[in-house]
Amino acid sequence: EAEAEAEAEAEAEGEAEASRPLMRVVVLDGVYNHARSMFRALRRRLPPAHVPPHVALHPTSLSVYQRAAKRYASASAATVAAGATGDAEALRVCTVEAAALLLQEVGEPEATTHAFIAAVVANNGALQAHKHDERREANLRRREGRPHEPRSHGQAAG
Image (cartoon, rainbow, N blue to C red; front, side, top):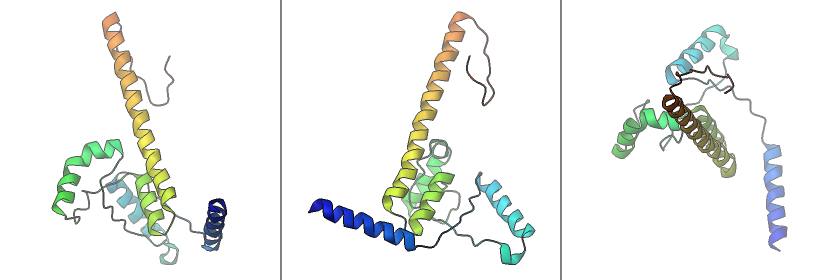
């Protein structure tokens, strides 16, 4: 009986999903000021009838993205603690978190948005592991008296 209910629920979700209109989204990826400049340039260059509608997202929690959290954590925490979310810079989120917020606002299932956030958390772990490996390598070089060998992005480790 539970299996039949689960199947019926999944089928209903699939039908609801199929009945929703296709939504195309343009995501401007960049730090806040660059994304704002890109949006303004887009509005200047396109005829008014072709400028896509835009939405303002209003995060209610701190970013889980490690780099953003490191940079904005204290400002975000103070703003959230005060209950004032009028500070546009205090609750910044990364691009993936913004996409998850948008999907949540248009009614996507919670599992979908949680998958996006889980991907950000997994990326944080990979970044930490990479930093740890780089520190270990630098320590070995220093102990062995080898000079520091900076690597450019995309260059394979030798």
